[in-house]
Length: 119
Length: 119
Image (spheres, rainbow over the protein chains, first blue to last red):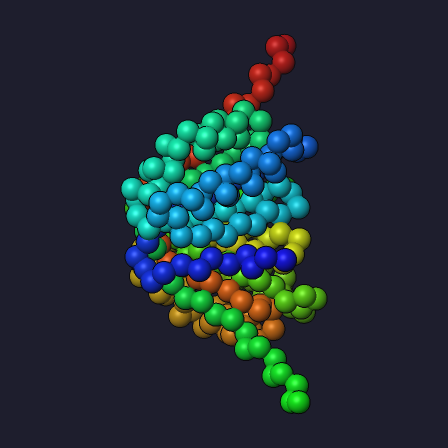
């Protein structure tokens, strides 16, 4: 599977924290639109990366990272993205929360790779 | 199921964004410790709430909300929490990312409840 982590630069930068409950069984067009939005976001000025997770009950969290507040504003106003959000409210979500936050500190940790076999 | 959303006050406040990949099959003690940490966090000064999601591949995101950076520092230094983090690195995770961010803006949206039946 593709690496689910985001490669972000040193802070400061911005995070958009999106927590949402999907409607039961409401999948028509969702995956296609989500894929298209991920593709569009990558091409936006100031986009830094994204992490996303959705549990078996349809509750998901997506955190996208951006260079600055201006980049977030431009992405919000992107017309195809605005239409997708309207569609989300109409068809796909029962409830969501959005938080815009300025990242001040960041830490990454990874387990040491197991030692390779000697030749 | 319990409501998965966080009831946070008006910004500003702080978010700790924790994204982590679980090791395959490494569940010994994890759920018990996670439950205990959730209980302890709730009792910490400055704790505001939490949202959490984990997908079928074991990639999870937890965002906890705090009144200020000092509350986050105190929670990081809480001894039982520090031990749990060490155990996480030793046993439960292959990789994680932590971001500390100052929440500047917040929006909540919920679908209108369906009209109730007339009596």
